[in-house]
Amino acid sequence: MIANLTGHLSPDQQDLSPATKAMLALRTQILAVWMANVRSTVRQARKLPVPILENTVPAYFDTLAALLTPGYAARAHNDLGAVASEHGGERARMTEYDATDVIHELQIFRDTLFAELEKGCVTLTAEERSILIASIDATIRESANSFAVVQAALREQYVASVAHDLRTPLSTAQMAAQMIEHLSGDEAVKRYAGKIVASTQRIDVMTREMLDRISFSKTGPFPLHIAQVDMADLAREVAHYAQSFHSVELDLEVDPVTGWWCRESMQRAIENMVNNAIKYGAREEPIRLGVTTTIERVQVLVHNKGAPIAPEDSESIFQLFRRAGNHDAGEGWGVGLSYVRRVAEAHGGSVLMSSSQEEGTSFVIDVPTDARPFAGAPTAA
Image (cartoon, rainbow, N blue to C red; front, side, top):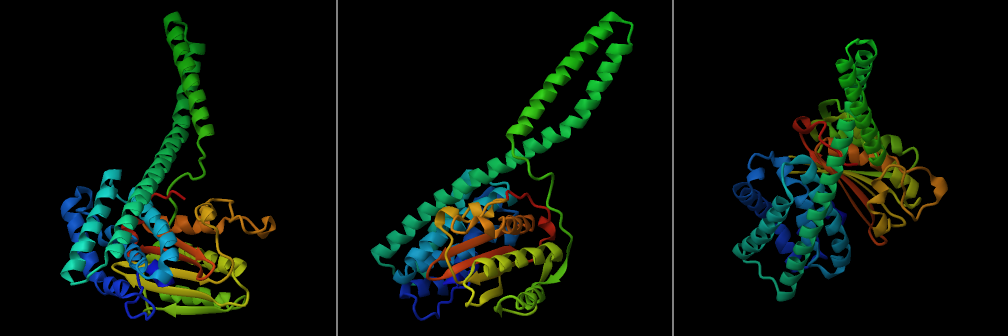
């Protein structure tokens, strides 16, 4: 069911329930109406570019639809929280939304979904309707919480950056005041200069304390060198190299997939995902590397079979120098996935993750097809 993470779950898939198939058949129509309704209702959404407004909503839609197939419900429930969290985080980084806007647009999604299903003559049972309503309400909370957390992290980065940059002019002012205090023969001037020295020293102490309390690991926007890139060719190149170490199945929805990205950082990010799949996946099972597209966005998926990532590790694996708890301490530091998230976020996108014993582990980089307007976007990773 990993196709749900890219918004490509097919209504022709035989083991899906009739309700899931009916929802998927109306995906394009429902998402188009939702985007139009959000633009007309949420003020901050009116001028958003299509790939930013679209966000991870295709994956969100498909995962909701999968909830209506009993065999997929448990897995879809786990995926839904991750997708909703990334949605909220991307809204914090890429828009001028506030938390109310995040909640409102998902409420609009709920209303649009049921209205369009009714127009399409799709009849849901009371239980199916209840599942969708409860799940959407839960993900509204998840998305809003993620929005608040990422927004707080961005504020912290901004404060740390300002505090860091203040130290140079502050030091200059302090030295100048000390020189005036030392050289002036006017007692009043010396007295005022002494007050300036004391005040700048106090500010310096406060600034140092602030920096000590803030984990300041980044000094500015993630550097990107945007150029026209064929993502299919890039995936092919990574797959060819990785074949020397592990079997890789390359799955390209279309070829070429041309867009504007930083080739070097995107290649390294894909390599990191593939390397993690080789390192932690089942040795006898091939890795799948796929490239798909939605409305003005591109998804790069890496999937492997093997031991799943525990739900409690789903966020920590993206943190610098952290690894999932089910891997031995001697297997290396978790730098790669932190880099993957920063690359995706700097391109104006997100990273989605899903893991289970039955389906294996999937990571998806989901970015705008043309990242030029969003290059150097804020990153919370």
